Structures are given as structure tokens and as C-alpha cells.
Image (cartoon, rainbow, N blue to C red; front, side, top):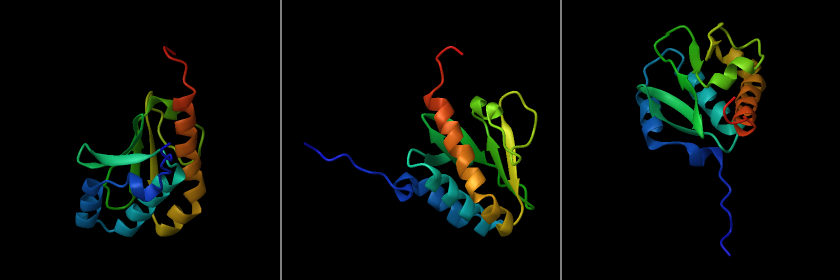
Length: 134
């Protein structure tokens, strides 16, 4: 009987995202790298790829994408519709199907690390427990 593979966050990393991050010229490059690590470490089911010319994270469905054009903040667009039912002071906007998250310093990233991981895990939980057709 084959042994089930246990995935670690490093298994979810894609070569395309590694190349993107290596080439990224951004004043908050270290913060972007830290946020990427937080997201990938939050849940072993998270994977990443390049979508819309930026790192994007998914689990069964698309979850969130980096928006790297803002030089003053790490800007994450959570675009899975279930995000609107998750309550967090980090999630901004009153859109019908998405929320934004902004972190401006490494202190912000470290301070909100657990909250960001909780948002990711709550989103995965909502995807797993969604009732089809609702």
C-alpha cells in the first residue's frame, strides 16, 4: 500500500511564482515575500500560480491574488465570493464578491500574521462546507 504524501508549504510553491518574486522590483519586496509565506503556511491545501500577471492562491477555486502595483502597501485581493461572509478588521471594502487587504510595513505583516492565516483557513472551511446551489 502506497503511503499518503504529506504536503508542506514548500510543495505548493510554483516555479513561475518563484521567478515572479525573484524579479519583483517593489519597495516592499520583503513584506510581499513574508505574506506569501504566511499564506502558503496557513494551510497545506493552498497552492499558487501566476494569474492576472501576479501571484495568485487557490484551493479548489481561486482565493486571492497579489496586486503589486501599489508601491505603498502589500495589497491582496480576496476574490472568492465566500470572503464577504468572513468578518475581520483587515478585510476592507463593501463589494458584493470580494474584499481587499492592505499591509504597509513589516510590523503590520508580523502583527497580523495570525489573522491573515485565520482568514485563509476560514475561507477554505467555507469552501469545504458550502451547500451546492446556495
